[in-house]
Length: 479
Image (tube, rainbow, N blue to C red):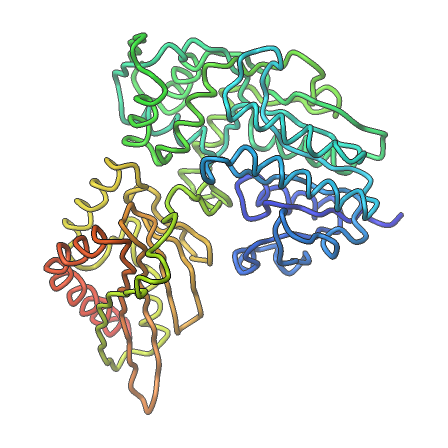
């Protein structure tokens, strides 16, 4: 029997990046739709799939051709004020092309929540997307999940940071809301079963783990699994979702705008009440304690194949720059050094930057800048980095935009800025001598952007030369 051809959207995201290898292991032929194909090139499974450049709002004729099942893992949460409308438009376009191509089934991972409740904007949009996907007649399996527990998931990282850092927490009323957390491994198993099933499937299936708990009980379970002392929770009625999201943005890696959307959903009970996905697909879900323990072990061992930061979060993007008539000003700080170290050694030092190792020069100033960024809703320096860098990765408050072995590393800033910024290293080798260019670029937005550049210029004169000198010295020491 010919293996099914599966189109996966969102393969560079948290769930998608774990789903693809699971499908390959089952023998499926996998095709990935990617807005930026380079983000998938470093995945260990990249050479086992076909990658098509495109987006869910574009022409999907080629992507859908010959597909048996299309998987929809795309989320536009927070992409402008009209993100909910955009989500429905994207889903409708996806369903139209699927119908025209004769796709047998769409499998969609949505959000759990009772239709009769006063749902948050986030959960309402998740369910509206399910309706849009079913609007053209293609059979749709909508898997509705709530809290996903796994190393690198937004829910787990928010839980981990809050409980690890705060022995006493003043909490909102939503800590008494019930939820049914599911392990990422179980969520992926259910997705695979729904995708590969030969049965005539259609409709909503609800995804949950073995335990129904309150958020407070989930925090207590985490503390126990992590070997921490019992946490003291002091619920108060005055903490609004807005205040809660700013607090979460300050002490966890979850950005404030995303935290706001998630917190608003926490007032809704997310418990399996309808058709159970686990029962329907023969999955025995893990209990909460086992799910948390596995996530902690994976985090400690560095076995985190995907994180929620793998998605290119719009929260850290500049919405618009100067209008075209403003002249397109770009401020540049370029520094060049030569070395007897090889290009490979220089590149190794450049690509080891950030995370625990830090930024070579003026780390105290980098830490202050990171803290300021956290306070104003940016990512700060909390995200760290992956051991082996790849395009699209988060690296502290930067994102990797360009990466070429032994020659180039280009970072795009995602800290809060009145403009857009990049930091690039270019390495070249000629006649036994290696040259390295370090280029900081800033495209200001209006007057505030220009004032910002000149205000930080004195610090640049200290940080950037020191950074380059130490990179070169470290490379020469290893030569």
